[in-house]
Image 1: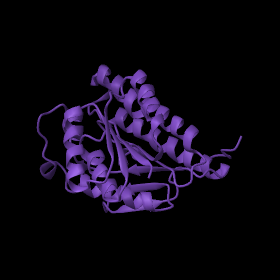
Image 2: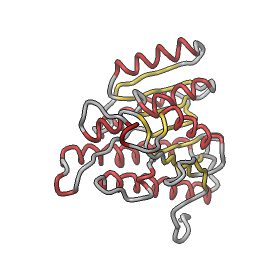
Image 3: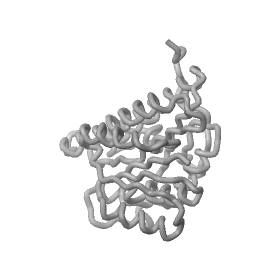
Image 4: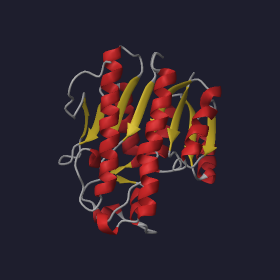
Length: 253
């Protein structure tokens, strides 16, 4: 049984995805900055699913050297799924945004995801059943005011993953690339984005999903032959689609 890699697994969608994949009998490699949270999650998984192998790694994916060393550490394991879930947002007008945080966000949301995706494609392009799932956002398909830079990073994730998916299909590769685009999801995301200690989703959003619900949506995408799993901005229903962006020309060389 191969391993499922999940970055950003210490909380939110990544945390719930780890539990959901463990329930499917998947061995796990879980990465995040907070080792104590990963240790707690590992214990919870072992308590519920004692036969599941769980490897945890503390890594800061805003540090590009650590991105490469993290992937190199995976060479000892046979992988079947790689989930680039780690990411964060930053709310505020462009002229007032914290450029230090923006730099970290660009490193994590774009650079780390691109490096890890590329390395995984190189190693697993012709492996039957292999999947790459990159976590974008509804904001990766609709520009969100007061979060324009964050939205732009997620547009990158969406376009990159859709383009990769088409390229792989045209080449006849066995690896599938997919993109999950949640909307408002109850997690630590808002607290970090707004730099606040507490945030109540109930009073700030008319509709939102729990992280557990979005992990279930991820499994729905995983089980499908579709490329995009996205939350509809009006109905808040989860939808599976082939592609959303238009594509010019062939991806073939």
